[in-house]
Structures are given as structure tokens and as C-alpha cells.
Length: 202
Image: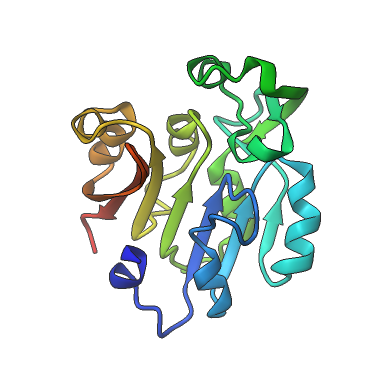
């Protein structure tokens, strides 16, 4: 696991998991939870709140959608077998031809990443890694942070692009402008994987 190599796991750190979905399945933060790290897990799916209360009681679970803040957007909920792909981005639904898999739509208010971190990160507390998996809404999440105050050491972003496309994506260019470097990509299936960005200042 590349995160284990990048982070010192023999001490307790802090992670922020946006679009966390299930507390155990396909979770990039569960390993660190088991080792006593402080976790802030954010997901607009109301079904996840009960699961986190059962399986990850020490984590802070925020049942909200992260975006530019105070926007009212439509949250598209898919059938249970595809609920990890719930999204605020209808273009994502169309691109993956999931229109017939949408079982519910809900108008929700977004909250900025900055406001969540201001509420739960103590003064002087550092974020070891930020995991963003929000199905097409990644850039809006990143744009809602205050990068002068909150600089995770490592950032994971889910991607479904070829590597040459990842280098020039809006997300990569945005993070490079914030003094992060694209370190690597791990593959999950075909071109689906996670991009690893590291803070240039550490």
C-alpha cells in the first residue's frame, strides 16, 4: 500500500476522507482507522451515517456534500449495488450511462471543505492525507479549501483517465498550482485508479 510507504504509520496521524462511502469496503482510510488515527469522514449518503456509527465509532462522520459552499445541488442516488457512484455531477451519470440506475434524487446544500476543517481540525493540527472520491466533483471539492491554512501532506484523487490525460487534467493542474506534485498512480481496474499528490513543502 503506497500510503503506508509515504506516511509514518507507527504514530497516530489525521486523515480526511471525502466521499468515503462504506466504512470498510474499498476504503483508503480504514487501515489508518484501525491504527488509531483521527478521521474525518464526509459523505452525503444518509445510509452511511449508521454504518460509520457501528463500525468506526471513533471517526467523525459528516453527512454532507462538499462543494464550493452554500450551493443547492441535486444529489443522484443509484441502486445499492452502485451506491459508491452516487454523485452531484449529472455529466458523470451520462458519461457512464447510468441514467436508468438512478433510484432517487435529492436537493442538498453543499458545505465547503474549509468550513468542515475549521470545525474539526484543531489549531496547529496537521492533516496527513486527504482522500477525495466524489465521482466527477473533485475540482469543486479542492477549490473549496483554504490551502494556506490546511495543507494535507498527501492527497489521493480517484481517476478514470489514462495517465497522459491525468497529467493535464483540471485537478492535476489545480493542485500543481497549489505547490503539489503528482507522484504516482495506482491502478484498480483498467484505467481506474488513484492519483497520489505530495506537498512540495514537506
